[in-house]
Length: 547
Image (tube, rainbow, N blue to C red; front, side, top):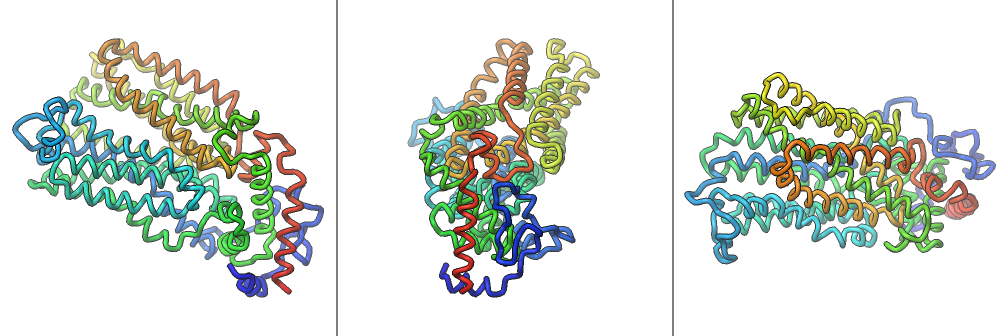
């Protein structure tokens, strides 16, 4: 960004309206005593009637669609297994019966055992394959480009998947989908948190993972709708629709700005000032809000660099970072090991026990459950700034614990009324999970991690959750088959552990800027002394540009 461009914009800037900002745009008394609320302008109308906020939230909405591809994938694979055309063939295929050459030419032929497992989990393998590189990509290329690159890969994967002629082509396509999703998933929530208007950050970032259900709902009902198509388009059409969220994201990303924090980290502060001024202050580069944000971001990044917080080893070098590492690993595992994977297994079993055996009825109930979960997740996302992150996590965990205690698995659901009651408890469990562990994790991760460790920490948390999820995918069926209802006691114990972890080690982060949250982990003096120096630097740049 040329200084002449900055000078041109500044020449049309308005004076700051806040009482603690003087005529030159300086904050009287320094920045140390101020919070983000002190410099936020008082809007006299809703955000959707403010042009720059309406535009910003529109482009961020596209980034929020990233989890929809993942939700679509899981729901679609369940739906495809009910489609006769996808299952076509006279002989069942198992992994042990196939050589690699046969795999390259084989049709689906009622996949079972290892082949079915491979078809379902190959996207996770693709996700894990890309994961070690995602943190570096997000730090090197920025937050915007990885989202775009990930979407391009996912679009290619969906197109190849929908045109698959054999199992190997279908498997390769699903690997690409997982690979692209991994690249986008690490950068996307960081971009949302780093770009969103300060007072909207909590809700917008919490909305991120709720869109998993958007993809799941579309997939569930699209496979339901194509069930009666008597040719391969019964499964090709849903497979192709999987690229829809990525196409929308890719188109809207044309207007998506880069993360101001990444730009400042790369010594491109004038570009960051322009982006913050355009999207947070309606073009006013003299805004006290812009001054505060740039000063705070710069101070935080310099403090992190001074402490050598740019490598993975930094997680072990200070008490604050070790605390962060514990939180992000526990949060990743918590999302997979809170009994939610077992609940999905029990639903189909209980429906059969109480006489609901029709695939149409079961799919309808499953589709209804996805809509129910989405509405619950949305309600959780809207409450994050009122109740707080810690309160919602604890409330959700306690609610899930109580729901599990009310399961009466030992009775085997022999009585119809008991089975109906357990279905109600399953919906209750899903409600508590959806209001807490759906919207909160990505929000909480972006808040507890400082800029220099944000992408790396997101990768660590994702890997922790996926590793446990893959393990449970193998353990759950075996344990349920061998010890039955007793296995759910493991989830009860784990929920108690998660409640204790959240109670003692998960601090509240609401009503704080991303940089001020560092003080929760690193001490109250984490940024003191740097803010005013950075403010003076920013102010001098503005004054020089004016003249």
